[in-house]
Length: 465
Ligand code: AMP
Ligand code: ZN
Image (tube, rainbow, N blue to C red; front, side):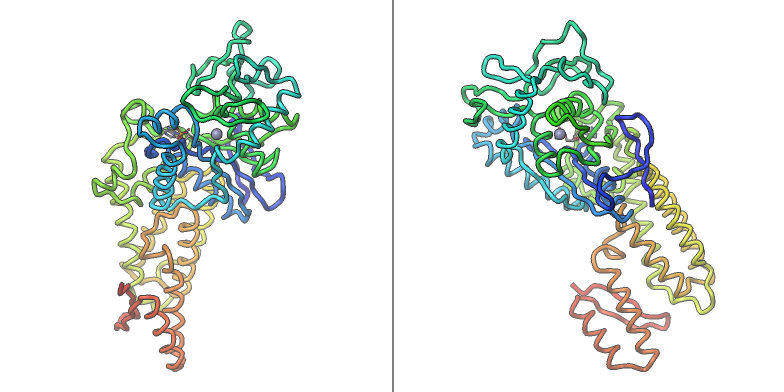
């Protein structure tokens, strides 16, 4: 399974070849923990989850880092407003963030560094940039002189204009098209947290955080760097200038960016007030699984327009999938070859993998799943599904659970595959008149909270707890 990604840096689709064979190193820009993530943020994190899981499905081992920005203008402002120490304030939203990820079935990254735990590495990076002539000091702060980095603009296409060189900006939020010298280190200010360091008292700029933490945990060169499209400029452009300015080597090889979740044509954003958090939706009775389904259903490079109708639609699709799988589970195995051919299941597995390999085309992968489930329903209406086709289906659904992970918990999530396997083993034991083994398996299932029932149509199971 050879993956292909659209690389923002080269502006074309490229085959993915990791620097180190068999291992993918991935840096995903994480949340600024000054409030609850909104579902626009979560769309980007879900894209990264699909990316991570697709890399694994392709047989690669993955080392993923997601930073937690626990110091910037916004976290400082909000902590102050809440009357809390910065750490106590951000702790709360980090916990909330992990709860959201859990509810959305996002797989954990290997590392979640907090910016405030990497001040030493950030200071060392600034020292390297100063030594290489890329940085200058002004009024207690340290800036990056973009005129010293000829590659500036290669990711975003935003070029520094001659008349702007030397114009400084120390805010994290600045004009989209305006390339200026940016702040690396902000001199200490009254009433703001600061650190006493070798480069003077102060705190890091946001861009510096990601360069320092990615290089500390993944090495100076690594494979993939991701974020939302709003991160391309200035954040990622500045990261490249910092990292390559310090090392003289190329930084990340592949840059992937997720398009925005929009509401009535406008980017979902805290500042616009047009946002929902996951807890808002759950409080309204929505299932997080439907949110997951909706947010991954559109390929990541397309904008996704969020509507309540769309969310209801996603919930209905999930219910339909659950019904088909329930039906399959309760149906007796076909006596003959069955109407659902193993070849159809194999075709699905191929289509599904090809879709994901094709720049994570989740819409195509889901379409393949729906085609397969339609075939299952048709077969169940007729001749049924044979044992070998069922086994092949089990494998196929494992692939679905491995990446899209939108199957209802009862069917394949958690331990359902294991349960199915034990039930089949018990049926085989009974057929061989090995009742001691059959009983032992029944006891083992009971210990897992699973009751089984032998019906004229075969064995069915349900959870007792
Ligand atoms: P922040 O917490 O603001 O640093 O954002 C976390 C991530 O969410 C970043 O990768 C942003 O690019 C991404 N993001 C912000 N708004 C949206 C949106 N409306 N749709 C998709 N991703 C977004
Ligand atoms: Zn970042």
